[in-house]
Length: 207
Ligand code: Z5A
Image 1 (cartoon, rainbow, N blue to C red):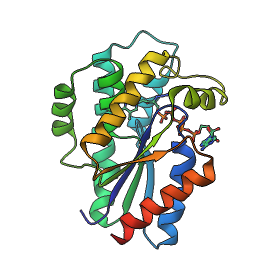
Image 2: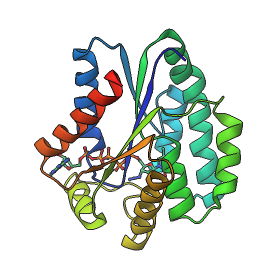
Image 3: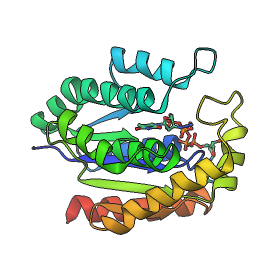
Image 4: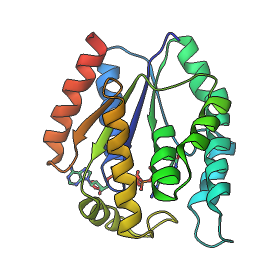
């Protein structure tokens, strides 16, 4: 691939949406062409799947269905947005990706990681992130931030225990894959978070 693939991960209210725009700006200032996208979502079909996944006014979605919907949205997203961009030399900056499936559907819902790994191999055409920034914050701090935004989605109404399992799983992934996954202390004030992000991105760009 000519372009690089960067993902942002973390729990509720960790600041992904805030910081992804900041990273986009850093890349643009470095003269790097970049596409900003998100999961679940990124194409018309995948955004429709997102609506179904996040909505609360419908029949109960089973754990298996939830996982398959995440990967259906992802396969479409990779095929139509991520892979073509990377092949053209455009960098892709994505708000969540497969680490979220391991953390939420694996750690949170209890689906075994071998099943998720099988789907990852089946649906991603060998596309994997080159760099992942894990914005880590204590669950209660992140939830308090997220609650300030108003109506909660189908994930945000889960209990603390669920989000603690999600966080543990993200931290475990970072421990297992330290070259790819860099932890950012997202509990700091925003300017300090962005100083850390700038250092990591500059190092990634310049090697
Ligand atoms: N999901 C899944 O289960 N499996 C998968 O494979 C994938 C996803 C891909 C939607 O994701 C859901 O999909 C998600 C997991 C599941 N669960 N939920 N909920 P999402 O990324 O769209 O939703 P989200 O996690 O709630 O992210 P968000 O809404 O975009 O929030 P955020 O990006 O983490 O935070 P933010 O909007 O940038 O910041 C939140 C607030 O905090 C805001 O007011 C900021 O101004 C403030 N903020 C940010 N940083 C700071 C600092 N440093 N200090 C103080 N205040 C701050």
